Length: 353
Ligand SMILES: C[S@@+](CC[C@H](N)C(=O)[O-])C[C@H]1O[C@@H](n2cnc3c(N)ncnc32)[C@H](O)[C@@H]1O
Image (spheres, rainbow, N blue to C red):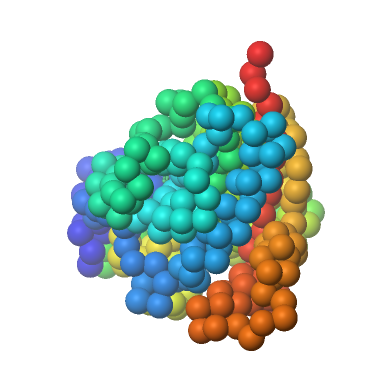
């Protein structure tokens, strides 16, 4: 039994009631016993999963090209910067800064992560700075980047009983095993969001509602920077998400590159994640004043972004370093790897008057 499991048992035995969203928040962000709380875990071959960042430096190089395009589009403002949230151990920041000269601002609420990032990025000196929350992002023209952030935000789980939705709450059985039980909807805000879900679903259909992601996007939209927001993550559109094959939702746990739906086991030792509902994210962004610029499979978008670089390689045999970058290009863009399951959403954020 993990330390976090014991903490949750204690809370339940003391009479507290716990939504799945609360348990997922603790499983990911408990400062001592959550998966992400104590500090950045290894991502990549020796970690639990790969991300586009862990594929290699080409991703950062391509996003530096996007930064250049955004800089041009905004009229080459002298105070332009790149902002990143979910910078983890600072790898993407390093890769982007190695390929461009813009300032870099990291939004990092966790001081342990900031300490690791400061160590890794020390050579960039004053080019890189930190803020602890979106509300304190500087008022500058910017490209805002995040890779795999909303998929790591807690969700509520809800289940259709044939005539209405129940929320899933975490309870404990006689053997101290945690289980999910249907119960009332915990908040008015959740009830309002649930009213958007389709009703022609089979009994027992279970899905996620990502209120935390909506809060985050609204806060981002009201931030004081202006420019372009780039969100890359795995996710689905409304029709794909609410198809009958997805009757258990998309919540999964990851450990050692294995994935399953035992989401209440080994809490705090495994990553818990869901697919992003891109249809809802776009709607919420538009409602908050953002304008959709691009929504695409990652492969198509990065494939195009990489064309100028590919053109520079023409006519000469690739050396070992170039061959490594070409393999990364393939991993990021090929539909059988990350090209199709990952999507990118770019939204314009205008200057607030
Ligand atoms: C799946 S990992 C992705 C890490 C990295 N961006 C990458 O692609 O390799 C999710 C990251 O989101 C971070 N995170 C979650 N909520 C955050 C928040 N509110 N602000 C900053 N980072 C956050 C976690 O600490 C973790 O590093």
